[in-house]
Amino acid sequence: MTDQNKQNETLQSKATTFYSMLSQKFEMLEKLPQKQLPMKYAFLLVGIIIFVFAWKQIAVGKIESDMNKKLESERVLVTQQAREHADKQYKKEEERFGQVLAWAVRSELIRNNIDQIGLYLNQIVKQIDADRIVLIGEDGELLVSTDKRLEDVKGNDLYSSEVINENKITIKSDVDGKKLLIAPISDFNKRVAVLVISYNQAKIN
Image (cartoon, rainbow, N blue to C red; front, side, top):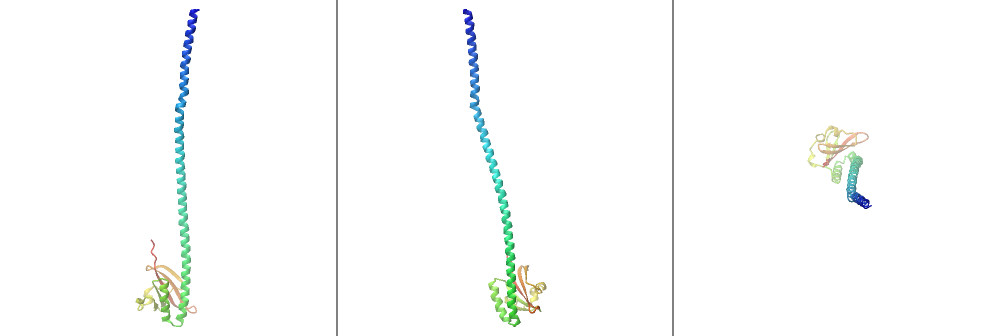
């Protein structure tokens, strides 16, 4: 029985030792995830956050860029439309002014009040900040000029026949670097003269 007891004790000792080793192994395995997995998760989480943040920045930047391009395009379009509308309105006002001025000059021209027309046009040229105003008769004679240096010049030497023979209120945007407002003057449907108002052409920056 003594030997049997010794054998039993030996087996129990070996079993205990084996169990102890297994326990240590399992304890190490249990501790391993607790030490390493959270760090992996942290890196993964940080990576996801960085990716999401970067994607958000890129997406927001693209949206802002697209919006800015769209707004700029719309601004340019609106500005262009506003300028075209303003130009049309300004052209209409210039044509009305030319028509009214032609009527006023015709009244004095019928009475042959050339000096009165000269005084009138000299006042007008200052008020509208024009370069000069000339009145040219049907025969090409220069009847009145606000520029006294032109008193001895023929009207048809100043402007082409296309300008002098214009039959309606016309604006020519660039004639020898000047903008011209041409207003024919008629008496009972017969042309008797033409007014030509010359403006300095606006410089485009």
